[in-house]
Image (cartoon, rainbow, N blue to C red):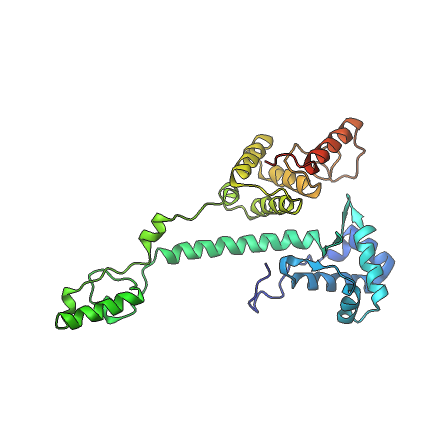
Length: 298
């Protein structure tokens, strides 16, 4: 989700040489600076949306035109071409799936930012959860062990003082931050976080694959996630870069599982598009059939 504080509200990474990206060059060659401006204004608008996606409805072009001060038909033409014409290795600048308008590049970039923020927040919560805090009342100051007293402990201490002639030293309270409750109900660990082991790019790739599975209505249980991680480790033992590429390959192709990198895809080689063999195409069709046939996920 986009951050709500003002410091982070308008952040998203932007390469200083984005104008020279092949897809951007194609956009500029047709629409010039106008197309470049429309595209990046759209990216800024997407950055402000929940989940970084803009719902598609009959008013979307008029609404965007009003913000961009460009004719609605012109905005629709430029963004539609961004979805269909300006592509590299089958990946367009923007995707319109009929329900949402979004940028794959922005999702990847913000996914990394959000994952890093979440890891830092979890680490901070863990540090503060183990650190004793100042006492909330003088009752806690008189105890042998310092900490935080719940509000009702103060009330109980006051009643005890009244009943026993205000003998506060005889009513000692040990103040904690619910350590026993935490031990009784340990937080459920996330298999993806444990597998990523602090690698934000790998964690972002795992989360992106999981979101794709939810979108194609084949969400994964924790057991299914562990089987996926076992298979991923078999395909690329200890090679984080290859594991990320495998996850991106499955996410981009809406595959329910992970498979060895295809020679005809953009993940093996960046030298240019290659022609897939008939056997590879047949295998891809079988995998797509398995994905959407309602078979058991995992």
